[in-house]
Length: 186
Image (cartoon, rainbow, N blue to C red; front, side, top):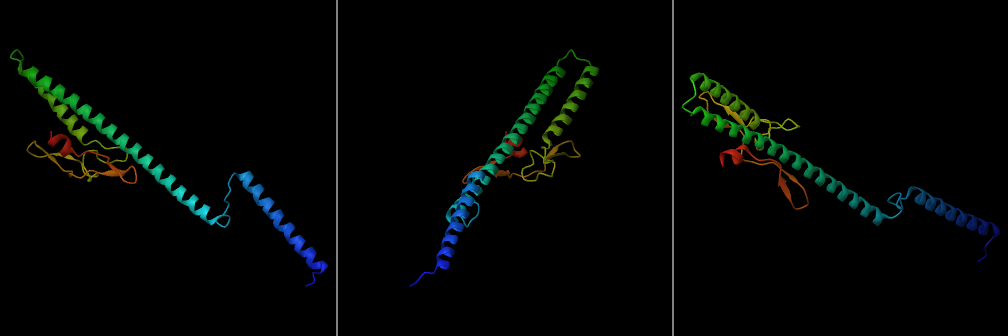
């Protein structure tokens, strides 16, 4: 087989062109710091990068979920501390009202303050989070958990279901406590 001069030059030019494009591609990779510019560069590597990106996104979501759970439970703790403080004050007032040396005016004043504490506790139990969801309503986050009945008693309007968020591939954690489990079970 005979190779003509034109074929030789064409073959040499094509090799130079391929080498030049390889150099340009390598320079682009060095400049960008990214070895795989497209899936055609390394199909297996591109698939692994896609899988790693998905895992990174999932870990970011898990981290955000953990932050959300931490904030919600911290809000619940703060509300329950306030309820506890209010109930302690109501107890003190009840003991004070039982003191035989108190006048009727003093007892009316104490009764008025206990009524305010009752309103405060009801408001605390119907606290909403930053998203506008009731903290202690279970999965009925748009329903106020406690309502006052006409006879002066209170009813729980939420449910027994706790909401939960995924914090790993195999673990989900409750994001809230129901009013029923926190108050009525105690």
